[in-house]
Amino acid sequence: MYYLYILKCADKTLYTGITVDLARRVREHNDSEMGAKYTRARRPVKLVFSKKFRNRSVASKAECRIKQLSRHDKLNLVQK
Image (tube, rainbow, N blue to C red; front, side):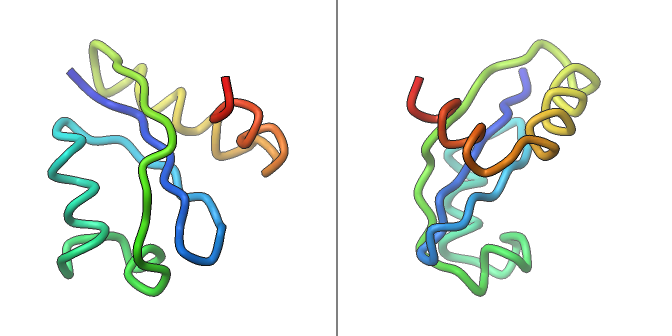
């Protein structure tokens, strides 16, 4: 199972990614050097959206679509 997730960073920016272990990945973004370089400079981060996918391919395609959305559209997705 893969998870697509959106994090809200301390500077109010949004970060999108995929993982197989959502709780571990959020911890990494907040507490370790294994978090993305982008989020390491913008801690703490908060999980604001997640969705399950059966395989990596589908999750990656959804991640790509979300990354192409405007900030406004991403915030609308998060609020639903």
